[in-house]
Image (cartoon, rainbow, N blue to C red; front, side):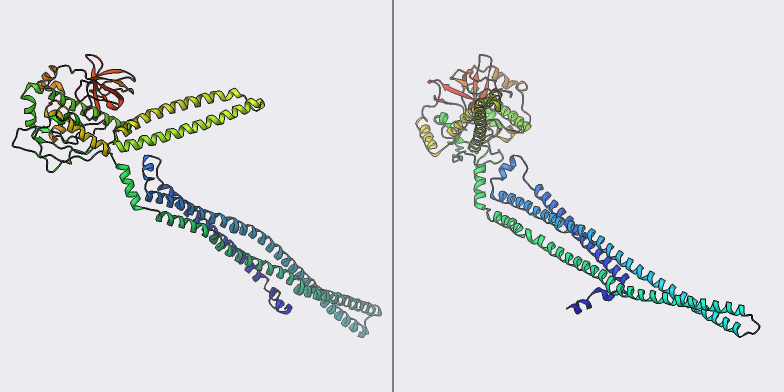
Length: 619
């Protein structure tokens, strides 16, 4: 194993010092390259998560009334759940980016600094050893050249001595001098030889140590460093995969949540919710009566008229005009029903004096149209309906009132909880004065008490409106009782004109239940004709007799009466009733001889006199 290890050792490349230096530098650059790759992958994950979050936020329902409407449907709730799961899914990609940064990028950046420092130290030692051996080689070469020079000079000195010794003409002193010079040169050569031999032995020892000990140790350290680098790179690649694998269970849960949300969609439940959302609570219209053109032209209302309990007895055989459903526009007319020309109706109005109250009915209809139109326009400008939701159909109004009551009760409970908490705190302060001043809690308790009283008064007001709606909502038993009542009283109701029975039924939101001639409706809506421009009608109105009082009423709520034809009343005020509600939601009242107008029926408590026509007491 040792021989095998030595065979794989970098010491075998002791003569490839520069190449190994280049290779280790390339290895460090490769780590930097992989670090940059992971960093870019982390940025991609962050950007992807950001885009996913923005997408989820973009399609989140807005904070408005539409959000409450959408929450009723299962498919809307499923989509909202999917958006929330998608937001969590984006969070997992952020986790991937964070883990890549902390477990790979940060670790590799720190390791690169360490490996660069270690590599620099090893190669510094290698260069130092190499410089030392090169210096020893130079010294050896210097000793060798000096020894060579001394040997040549000793040979020349010896030859000169021999030449002088053979010459008989040379003095003995010169020969002795040449001999001494030759001996000195031989001694110098011997010294150089000894020095050269010593340096040669030392160099060989250093060279052996350099190539078999110093350099192999340095290369071994470099080899260990390179192996650690490669091993660390492999660990980071494994971590790269594990970071994704760690979030897979949570990503799977997010996808399972989306699947569960999709499976929770119930089409039948959503379709039933549409019925609950738009159910009005009105009764369907009755059958259209047979129109006999062989008899005098008279008009009656259908059996489903809201005022037929008073007018059933004056319904002779003749023409009858059916009603539309409430809140249905006049465009949707019955295909079997013909319109009576406007000229016929005007002839009926103007032919006889006893039909004075017919003109009164016409004026009432026009006035109520203007009242309703102004109220509707004001609600559109303000962006909201009346506080009692009287602009909605009965069923929807009941739901809105019930929802408002639930909100008020929650607010009351919240205030009561705060009051209880403050009361306990005050008790603690009383028992332990060092903890606080008991009197500091009193202002807040007083404020909460006022808030509770205010909320309770609001609850009573909305409960009154809710009771009114529930009382007026039709039921099968009420319909049957009303039919019996109409039959019993059909012979006792006084005669009124046919036009009075065709009074347009209107409500504060501008919805009409009586089908009207399109020409009359367009003129009344687009360009209402002032009474000052119609002298023939003005005379009739001026000569109109003062309506008799048929009862009294008490205002339950204040009514400002900004619209034309209405009258302002204060809460608790007593007024005279001169014309009861004809089914359009308005009652005509009088304060004195000169001041009269219409008020909403739901705002007053009416007491009709016992001798009044169709007498009954109602709220």
